[in-house]
Structure formats: C-alpha cells, structure tokens
Image (tube, rainbow, N blue to C red):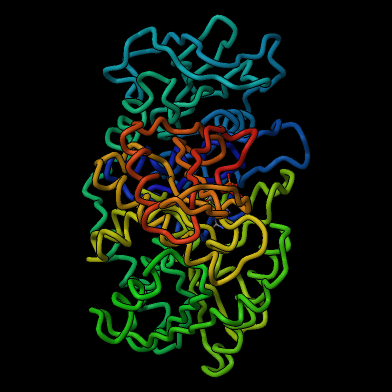
Amino acid sequence: LVLVLDFGGQYNQLIARRVRECNVYCEIVPYTMSLDEILAKKPKGIIFTGGPNSVYDETSPTYDKAIFDAGVPILGICYGCQLMAYKLGGTVATAPVSEYGKTEVEVDSKSLLFHNVSSKTVTWMSHTDYIAEAPEGFKVTGTTKNCPVAAMENKTRKLYAVQFHPEVMHTQEGKKMLHNFLFDVCNCAGDWKMDSFVDNTIKSLRTKIGSGKVLCALSGGVDSSVAAVLLAKAVGKQLTCVFVDHGLLRKDEGDEVEAVFGPDGPYDLNFIRVNAQERFYEKLKGVEEPERKRKIIGEEFIRVFEEEAKKIGAVDYLVQGTIYPDVIESGLGKSATIKSHHNVGGLPDYVDFKEIVEPLRDLFKDEVRRAGLELGIPEYLVYRQPFPGPGLGIRIIGEVTAEKVRIVQEADFIYRDEIAKAGIASNLGQYFAALTNMRSVGVMGDERTYDYAIALRAVNTVDFMTAEAAQIPWEVLNKVANRIVNEVKGVNRVLYDCTGKPPATIEFE
Ligand code: XMP
C-alpha cells in the first residue's frame, strides 16, 4: 500500500491512478489524518500531493514534522515538495519567475528517482513559490533555468521531492520516475491487481460489518451495482437492496436490473423492487421546467426510498456507490450550479443508520468497471453509459407523460441498437435520444401527420466537463432515423444535435 496524502492539488486522482497502473495499491487520504492512523496502515511509501497554497500562509495545510522520521519513504510533489523543504529547514520563497507548463529540467541520473531518465527531460510545472535553498542533508538532483531546486533528495532518509508534476502526461518521463520511486525506493512488490482489490475489499467489509444490517439504494448504474455486489459477497442476506423504478429508465432496464439482483439472479441478498412509475408521473404532471423536474424526481425518489427503509427498520450501514471523481466534484463544490445533479441513491438523511460505507471511494470509473467484471457482473451492466439520476425525465423537453416516456425509450433503444451494430460504441463518450417538445407536420402514407421530433445526441468527451458532438457516419444516422420514424408511433422527424459543451450541455433538457 502506498498512501497519497492530499493537500488539495488538482492532480491527486491522477497520482493515485499512476500508482495503481504500476500494480501497486494506493489510497488517497486527507492531510488531516493523524500520523498514528497513517502508520497503522503500514504504507510502503507516502506521496505528498500538490496544492494551491503557499507554505508560509498560516491557514495552509501542513503536516506533523515527525512524518519525515517515521522511516517511510516520501515523495513530495509541487506543494508537497515545498512543504518538505520548509518543514526541514530549507528556504521557500516567491519565485522571481513563475513556471507554468512544459519546462526542461536537468536531472541527476545517478539519483534512484531518475534512474534511466534522460539528463534533460521535459516536465510539467505549475508554481509561483519555489525552493530557494534545499534543507541541510539534501542533495539537489534537478534544476531548471529559473528554479534552483526542481528536485532534491535525502537518500539515507528516503525523502524525495520534485517541484514538477510527474503524474501528468506532459512530464514525458514522469511514469518512469514514479515507477522508480515505487520499486527502487519503496521496494513495492507490484503484484496488486483488481482481483486483490476485490478480495481485500470483501474481506474488510466482512470484518467491518460483522453481523450488522446493510441497506443499499440500487440504481442499476455501474457504481451502485458494483458496490452492491461487493456487499452481497461480503455479507449476503444481511444486505437489502432497494431498487426504485421511477418509470424514467431506459427500455427494459428495470427488468435487466431485476434479472441480475432479484431472486433469480446469482447473488444472495434481499432485493426489493418498487414500481413507482405512476407516482412519479403524477408528480410530474404539468411540470415543464427542467430544474423543477429534477427537484421533484429527486425528492420523490427519497420519499419512496424512505418508505421502504422504514419497513426495514434501523440498519447499521448505508451503502453509497461514491467513486473518486464524485469525491473531487463534491469537494470543489464552489462552481456555479449549472444544473442540480441528482444521483438516485443520494444521501437520505432521515434513514436510520449508523455509518455510510463507500467501497469504491478510491476508484476511477474504468477501475470500477474492471472490478465489476472481476465480480462477474454482466458486461451490459458494467459498460452501461452514464445515465442521469432523473433519467428520461430530463431527456423529455416539457411535460413528462407515460406516452412521451414510451416514445423516447423506443427511439433510444433503436439508436443504441444501431450504434452497437455499427460497432462504433467504443468511440463515443455518450449517446442517447431525447424527445424535443416540438411537433411538426409530416406526411406518411398520403396522410398528414403532426408528430414529435426526436433529437439524437452523441458526444466525445474525456471528462464530461467539455464535449464535442461526435461525427457519426451518415449511413448510421440515416438508418436510425428511418427506423425511428417507421417503428416509433408519434415521431415523424429525427434531428441530430451538432452542438458541443459548452455552450450546450451533454444532456438535452
Ligand atoms: P451535462 O448534461 O451536465 O452532463 O453536460 C454531464 C454528465 O453528467 C451526467 N448527468 C448526471 N449524472 N445525475 C447523474 O448521476 C444527474 O443528475 C446528472 N445530470 C447529468 C450526464 O449524463 C453526463 O454524462
């Protein structure tokens, strides 16, 4: 185990990821975790992350100096590097010239950290403070034109530090440096694989939960499914999963979830499906404004879940399928609300439970998927596309009705079917059909029609924060459009959304 001590840097998740890519298990912990707690985890190494602060600012995150004497190898990155220098008696100052972006560093190839790294190597810098003078006992192992201490180390104490960011791709030999730290300095074995994560998590969940009762809100999405299966494997029938079908799921999705988690599925757990379609449609009657729809669906979901939870009575644990990017997003929390993201399964604060368990808290989406496959969850669930908590409720412009849900479900099903047949699914970030609230005149079999237009959306995106409209081959679009107007009653036009994000959003609401 390697611990990443989080000082609030923006690339922390990347550091963790890079470590796991070297088959070394890694957890991110806050800088507020005590040294005793850290050492109790018996880490083979600790990585200090970057952070936005200056070490001289009194409110800046800091750490007990004793950590440097604990005998555990430490790698400080950016702010972590400055903190190490500052705490150990070096000088940190405002750099006369800040470095941002690609910067060449001259490194000492004799250093363990830079073993097999070119003596002049391109790194990614982002700092306004710098180390003017390394602490006593430290050797400077890297310099740039403007930065006298771009890397330093105390080999005996196994303390290493770099001003640049080895975890980002722009640091061309960054992976090698992290590899060197993990294997040559920390002596990690590099034998961690997803199956170890799965086994260890099941074991530790079992120990933690004992004979306690566990409740899980299952949405059918990959995160809550993987979390539920981990818990089912750990504590079996002590787990109850409540699956609320709000009638706004994709075609057949409710039955697919039931097939996996219900009594005929492979797992030993209590599964409760609540068919609450009518309730949701009733609440949504006459409501057109998307934010209002989101709120209503979110609140109603919680109410339904609460009713079920009351029937079950007090539980000891509530399961959340939180994954690492969610942790970051909620941690930032300062950006403007574009739309109120509501995850079905969001925290109900009235359900009687003692503690939350979040077995996927340290994983990235693709790692969750790998864990899902490892657990034997069917591929169609594991590779399910992102789907918003409020579901089709926000892919229907204007009022939501059972009839409109049917239309968008069928159109979306055809779209996904043709994308799969064309074999282009893996090139696309997200794709779905939405129902515009626009009706227009058409002609079908000599008859005038006055029907809805379906909008097709497909985007390429890395992080879902920005996106480009995907260029779907015309033949595929043509086929989809033909099938939709022929097979879905109530639709006479199909449009393709060519807008990126920004200015649009990915969802069409
Ligand atoms: P937008 O539409 O904001 O979507 O560009 C970005 C990504 O987030 C998904 N999304 C949601 N996911 N609950 C979720 O769990 C929500 O309320 C929600 N709204 C949007 C969207 O599908 C896309 O992947």
